[in-house]
Image (cartoon, rainbow over all chains, first blue to last red; front, side):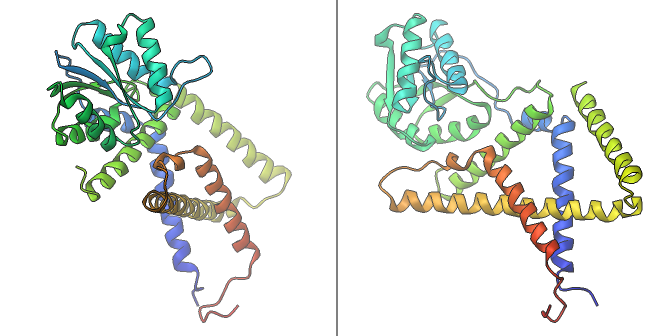
Length: 207
Length: 109
């Protein structure tokens, strides 16, 4: 007689086999890099009314600089400003993150008057609503939207819904070219995480 | 290059473990198939624990957001320790199952 536990165990075995195959394919083949390149949004660098650098969920480190992901986004925004692509550079995110970014921008030659702060938002949707309020009065519609590679798909749609015409500028995403197993697994994690976030936004009617 | 090195490394230590198990400890090499099956079962149980942890975390955070005064980020559950603890949960569950007598089809042990 087949034990009562045989069927669940068989399902566990199949699930385990699927997980193992997925792990090996993700870590040891370029599948993650191809998937990333396929869903990536290309950057569009052109003159706009403002450069908006989204928060990266981080703060500042002991040296007062933003953490790695936040730093990359901020630097991208600063370089866009220094290239003369917009008259205003807006930092969004937590108060500590914004302050660290703003101080860095000023040290790198961005005038204090050109830096706008948009603190108090917790989600991408919050950021879009807050920036609509902040920039609405200036008539700024076309913005250079700076955020991470995976986040860009959702962020761009949310900002379009908020009435902006966002030009995507990717910063701080996972590198297509990094083929180490660790980088590929991180890439798959980021893609899955952002996929779930998009599902949530769709279910909540935000997209 | 790096992938190849890592695969060779794992292959070498696995071959070493096979040699020690078969020659020093006298383990039955024919039982390797069954052991692989148990490994896949354990992996499946770990995946179930991981999915359950993430699902419950999501539900708890969304509930806290809707009833609590402060914003709680969904990224609270984005920590590698969740994976590590899910592995421990899965292994503990499998150890518990291994230490328990198998139930019969009629539900009695």
